[in-house]
Length: 285
Image (cartoon, rainbow, N blue to C red; front, side, top):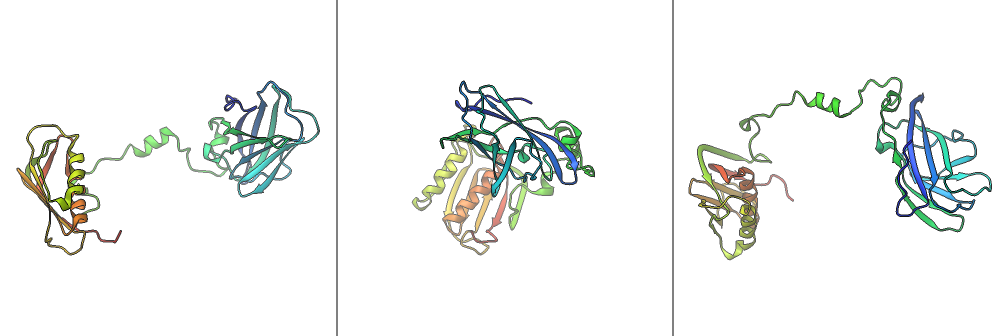
């Protein structure tokens, strides 16, 4: 089992391994290895606390050790006897716990040492041995699900295909109305933005969105508050023409919503389809 480097001068290094999930129904076996990596003995009376979502089964812990459930997912390990924990000494603790451990998310974490004097030392997380053998990857003997490794994920995703834009739309969430033509408009980092003082914040946001576009000539953008053909204080209308773009909102928030839709339609080179979008949020914020 690999040993990790000690954490910021901590006197103990921890490593953990799932030995097998096939011990019995809903029971797995594990090994916890703790090594005194300091140059000094640790006085008897110490305890090691850790967190795990798998409850350790009473009576399953290696002779000479005890793992007690404190509360929640907190457990404490103790060693019997009055012998000091010598430098370089490895404590090999085997135990059984409920259910299974098939990934690092099932391993114990958050170890810390409490010395007999009461001093507490953060030990960090253990080095977790890879889950590679069948008995480590299966939850139980009747487990029919394949291990969710990279190869399985690749096979599962190999049949995925991108849908054409007309099948899914270019705007999320789908607006109440969106119609586009074959014509194209182009925005640039230097596109002129026309807005009243009441929409200075929205204009600044739009300018920031355009900053990464190529330079050169670009369509003019007009931001305004006015009547929109659909109801709602956050409704907007977005008209995109070859040389000019109108973002009209029922209020400033509507203008903001229209800018977000405009950003979704923009390609990296600043090109976007000409057309009209009408929308308003279906639900309140």
